[in-house]
Length: 376
Image 1 (cartoon, one colour):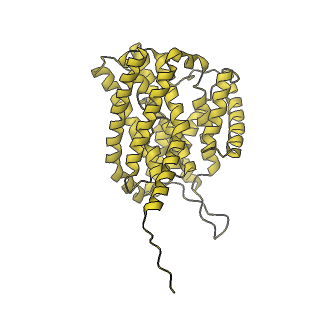
Image 2 (image 1 turned 135 degrees about the vertical axis):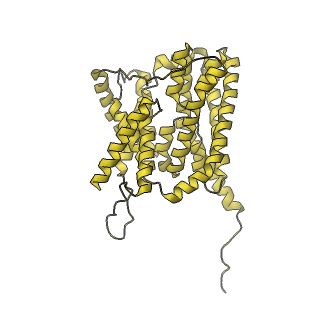
Image 3 (image 1 turned 30 degrees about the horizontal axis):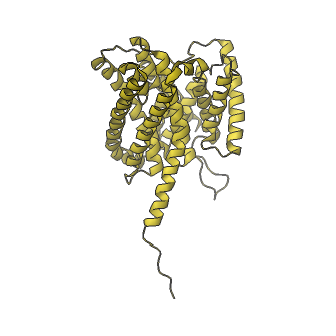
C-alpha cells in the first residue's frame, strides 16, 4: 500500500508542475483528480482499508482526516482573498454586483436541476455539478452533503476548462482585447506573511470546524474556516497572513485524490453518458452569464468587457489575467468575482440541498404505492 501512495504522490507532483506551466487553474486538484482516477481504473491506486472488525464496512482509501484538513486549508485560502480594499472597489456598484451574482446562481442551479433530471444523476449532484463558481470548494463539500463528488469533479472541471479556453477567444474576437497568464493573489508573500498564514490556518480551522460542527453547518470542514477567515480579513485581525503555497497545493491534491480514488469503470461509463448534456448546459449558462454581464454594464456604467469578465462563470485567475493584461478595471473585476465565488460557496449548497429535498418529497408523494398487499 505504501508503494501505491508513493506512486500517487510522485505522479501527481509531476502532473501538477506540467499543468501549472500551462496555467491550468487549481492545477494540483485537476492533476490529483486525473492521476488518482487513472491509477484507480488501472488497479494501481491505494485501495479501500479494512474496517475495525470483520463485520465492519471497508473504509475509503484516503483517511477522512486528510479530506477535512484539505477542506480547511482551502477554506482559509479562499477567505484570504476577501480584503476590505478589494471589496471597496465595488463602491456604489455593490447592489448590482450582488443581484447579478444571485442571477448567476439561479442560472447555475437551474441548469443543475435540468442535469439532475437525467436518470443517471441525482438532483443534489446535478445541482452542485453546474454551480458557476468555487469548483474546488464544491468538490470538497459534495461528499459532506451526500452527493457524488466524482460526477461533480468531472463536470466542474469540464466547466472550468471550457470557460478558461473560450474566455480569451471571446475577449480577443469580440472585444479586441489580449490576454495572458497570471498568478494567484499573495503569490509573492514573504516568510513573515506565511508565518501569519500558518497561525490563521490553526485558528481558522480550529474554531471554524469546531463551531461549524456544533451548529451543524453543512460542509463545516470548508465553510467553517472560510467564515472565520472572512471575518478576520474584514476586521483586520488577519493582518498580512498568506497561506503557504505548498499547503494550498497539497490541499488541492488531497481533494482531487478524494474524488479520483472513487472512480471505477462503471462510474466512468455513467459519467461519459451524461457529459454531452452537461457540456450543452455549461454553454447555455455561459451565454446566460454573458447576458447578465451586459445587464451589469448598463446598470453600473462599466465597460462591456469589464462586465463580461466580472460575470464570467469560472476560472477566476484566468479572468484576472485577462483583466490585468488588457488594462481593465481589475479592482471591479476582482471584487465582482469574489462576490460571485462566495455567493456560490455559501448559498449554492443550501439551494441545492433544498431543491433535492423538495424533489424527493414530491417524488415520494406522487409515486404509486408499490408495497405488496397485506396477506390476510
